[in-house]
Length: 240
Image (cartoon, rainbow, N blue to C red; front, side):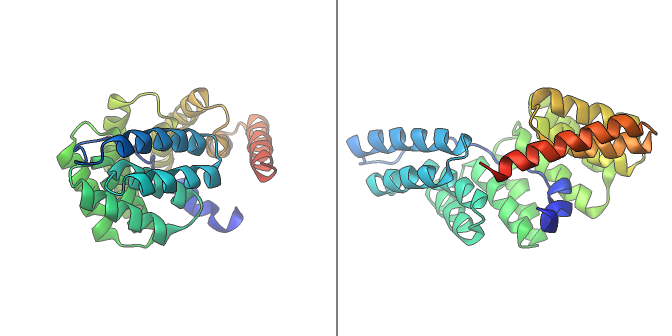
């Protein structure tokens, strides 16, 4: 965790759940079953059961090799397993099958960002917003891009748009808080981290970031409490 902690703090991107824009032809009953196995895989992914999710995605794809959603969602699971090449291949396949799937572009942009392909990352985020101007994840991803460039004011504007569309996503608030902290708006950052924690009480990173904001504001006792909660949540992950 320590080796990648600095990256994780600043580059949280919410991966989109892929949705259908076109329907595979000629799949018949196999497509019906493929959708069922994909739904099961999605549930396993949300529970953190990534190997089980992979098995279900694989079977769904074997039933319906042109079902783009299965590739896109399998890519999310591969990313969690740190199989970035595999994730990229799945997103490429999903886009080849369904070039209008905005979420696939967002998800691929995350991988391209990890590979430091900044032009490819920006291209994919822009494409996702071209396809779906109301895609909250797209504005969040654009905020991350601006933050990496050091344009924290513009990043906040993008996070504001993401939150206006989807105000229940804790990652958006955490990311906005990061940019506010860079502008030394510690009170604003504190409010954003607190909102992120309200939405997801197990959001470890938000506790850590809130602790930093509290230290900047001189609230050292409460900052230590947040650090302890952060450590507890992270230690629970280790044993899962």
